[in-house]
Amino acid sequence: MFKDISTAEIDTVLKKSHEAFLLYRRVTGDAKASFLEAIASGIEGLGNELLETAMGETNLPEARLAGERARTCNQLRQFASLVKEGSWVEARIDTAIPDRAPLPKPDLRKMMVPLGPVVVFGASNFPFAYSTAGVDTASALAAGCPVVLKAHPAHSKTSELVAGVIATAIKNIGMPSHTFQHVHGSSFEAGKGLVQHPLTKAVGFTGSFSGGKALYDYATQRPEPIPVFAEMGSVNPVFILPGALKARSEKVAEMYAASITQSVGQFCTNPGLLLSLTSPELNQFAKQLGERMKIIAPGTMLHPGIASNYKKNRDKALVQKGVSLEAASNDAPKENQGESTLATVHASDFLNNPTLVEEVFGPYSLLVEAANIEELKAAVRKIPGQLTATIIGEEDELLHYADFVQLVIEKAGRVIINGVPTGVEVCPSMHHGGPFPATTDSRFTSVGTDAIKRFVRPVSFQNFPDALLPAELKQNNPMGIWRLFNNEIRK
Ligand code: NAP
Image (cartoon, rainbow, N blue to C red; front, side, top):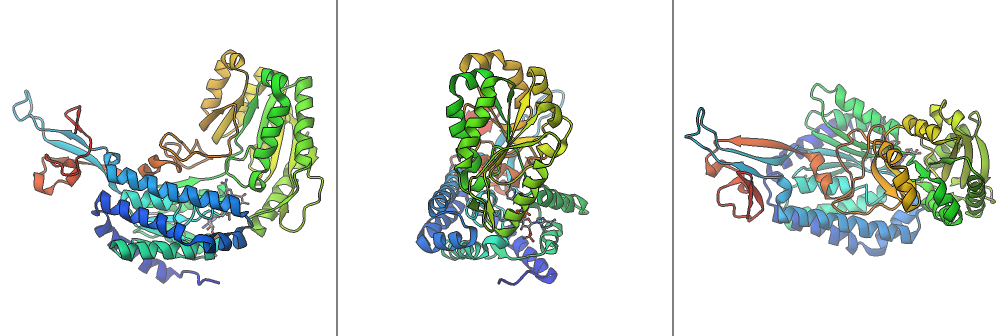
């Protein structure tokens, strides 16, 4: 419906983005904050039109979309507060000591500066929070980087509406034109062209492993490689300790039936793998969880491609050696629907089959039964890097399994005790990332204000005259931000 961007247009878009960068990188924190706040208010101002458009394109219910819209505006406002306050630039000032022996010490000042134009790929499963004005865009704009957004084809009208809000905010707040540009492309060539354009300096992505890895490979094949911050698949393992099963298996089953099937399982934090030790309580838990999942009806998935991928990956998982179907939705799925599914397997089969740790994106989970703690530890070692890992246990047994807990921490960016991995709080202490293949760089988060760190680099300014220094590093800093001054913090 919208015209795909051509190779010639990609060149024009990136050239304009670079021109915008030369101006936008010097925009003050206060002005960037007004810009981000104007985008948040503009999104709210779209009212029901935005929700109805997104509902029509994604099959997500109104309540879920209203919550995601609130989260998106909250994210934008958190970045506005961050850039207004200013300490995110991590200014360091070491003044000169000219008479230091045996050598004089130069005047050195360091701070973070923006990378340049960032290409962001909208995500199919979060039409607001990880798409047009989502966290990648908000953090790049906060850092001082212009954004070129490739709309996800599954919700391009929703994306156009939000892009219109950003265009209006650019005009009203007086930001450099082309600080944000919105493009469409239904072929992989468009994505490849955007990533490989010489003026692109970083990429933000959320989606499949194959998509994220392909973009990462395009970026590393460039004459000048650039960072790609790709958040890809995860099975989010959940380890259920024996004491918890004895004490509250029904409660855990209730909590997990809801988490596995929420939004038809279309969350990157969906618990796709449950692991525990053989016991009568575990058999009972499998039955309790299965009974609950049977009564959760199949739901319509985000788009036909995701629904057919779910069917294909589910079918593939269910025919693996030793895998049994424990339970599925009582109702048969209709077109483009995903049915709730619980499968089981013994750890001995799990340990020898890498297919079983692949993401089945949808309302699916595999329960792995280990004969003893050594086998459970071997299973942990087989699981690749994850966004999250969860441990369900009674307080005293968590201490008893302290070594096991340490092993689990090595695998994931967020480790949860006695909760579910779905539901990601947006705040500075959130880390939404994890070792490869969960992401392409485990050091960075794509949720929370630290997401800004993906799009900046440090620069040291040595012996600079005060007049040429950025405002944040001047002797009498008019911004009044906190700075490290010869290792002392001063206002
Ligand atoms: P996707 O296939 O990864 O696509 C996301 C974006 O990346 C789209 O704009 C797509 O372009 C682009 N892209 C993908 N591969 C590319 C390549 N080789 N070269 C250039 N651009 C490329 O994700 P999706 O469409 O949202 O869903 C497909 C599957 O991804 C799902 O079935 C699910 O398994 C998984 N998924 C996982 C998560 C998660 O959070 N773990 C989230 C969403 C989806 P086009 O528009 O041209 O295709």
